[in-house]
Length: 158
Image (cartoon, rainbow, N blue to C red):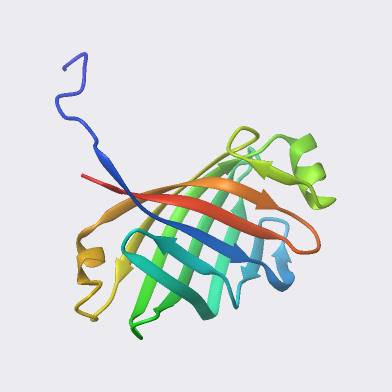
């Protein structure tokens, strides 16, 4: 077994994704809550798109308090491209930070661990390069309460 990695991860900034929470969350039970976003945006060097409904984020609470993200959304670019985005992720948040967020506080990557792994699907020729990218995203900000949203910086991994 090697004691060190034999490859390197290189990354390229792709976009920032900003998704406001729409409506009220749907608490299914103590371990599953569903969130929706019917607006928002994705902007980066090669993309400028809007989030379009429907979207969904099935957020599961694990027995140790870790949160697991399972999200799906569609982006529509100015060129009319539809880009389907699917991502899983992990959130680790201290109980006091979770309470503060529930009261409307905005948390950042300095406050919580929140990492996602998006993949993309599109037929539009201007954006087919996204079909070939495994991305990693890190939370920029997560706001709870009225006006809640999540924002990520998303990077392509090479």
